[in-house]
Length: 256
Image 1: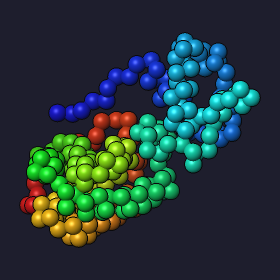
Image 2 (image 1 turned 180 degrees about the vertical axis):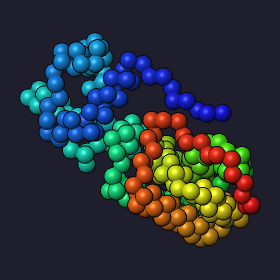
Image 3 (image 1 turned 30 degrees about the horizontal axis):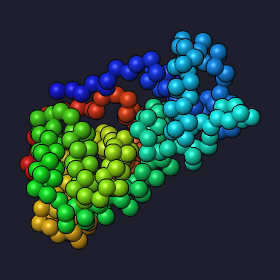
């Protein structure tokens, strides 16, 4: 079954359009966005919708408002890069090497440590959920289908299994960032089938309650994803958009 993105309401659509305009550089850092009447006319919405949209963009770090400032665009460093909307807008206008580098460095810092904790703390329920996600990944490779969604469930399951409340919260925030990496890796021929045994090694180490082996296996998996990303960037193929449903794998038999 193909998962479709939910239909957004007027506020959601207006938020996407103005957010994309800011992220694309149409309104550069320090610039004022147009006044409410012009935004109402451009987007065909009420002042209430525009005001709610601006509030949302302030919360995401893209805008700042003040009595003498007006409403101005903030520098990229102030944007909330853990916000899924910001990541999606960035992917639509073009992912940069710097953005992908930051993502991989973040994964290398967070995931191995979380997996190490998961090997110590994972419950039977946690492991069953990760096993289910792994089975979905394998089925997508062998029978065709949505590999990325199961891959995301696998990694988020590992982060939840560490039973650290802050890391669990981070797993929610990292969702769009992780999907960026997985979508790119999946576009590489044989990328999923080559990474599947690496995922199995991580899961087996967690099941075996071996923190050191789990951490090491996680690093191998993340470094493999880095190689995939570098290969895709070097090929100059068009990068996937996170606003579209996850790419579907074609049927491919593998002996794993």
